[in-house]
Length: 132
Image (cartoon, rainbow, N blue to C red; front, side, top):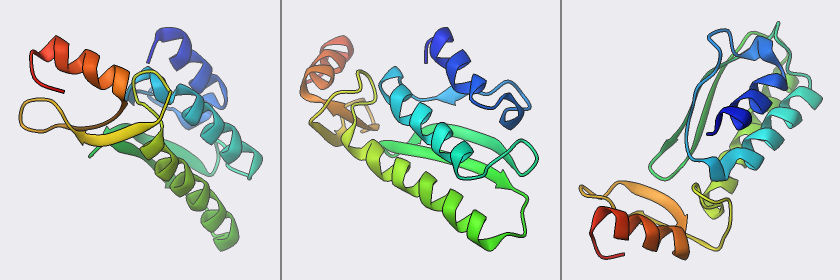
């Protein structure tokens, strides 16, 4: 994430990021994350009932971990449902550029799995000196 993207994400609800927030994923998922955070806020997440624990890419898809403190089962289900939809959507959005169509496969040494469009996959392979 760029510094501007990071600031825009945290600005949705600074109280969700007690340690300032860290996004261990590519710039291409910025719009996805921004939409996710806005949806969580609109659905009832607040600084009092939710903290973002970790945001990262794992096995080629988004992982968005939160700590929820609510006894409202409907709210909990709604928030986790929103997160699940965003994580699933990340499988079709290039992590580097935000475009598509994408393919989820390993290209780095030791087969690091990433979701990339053909153009970004070729650029990564060239930078690593391997076949796409």
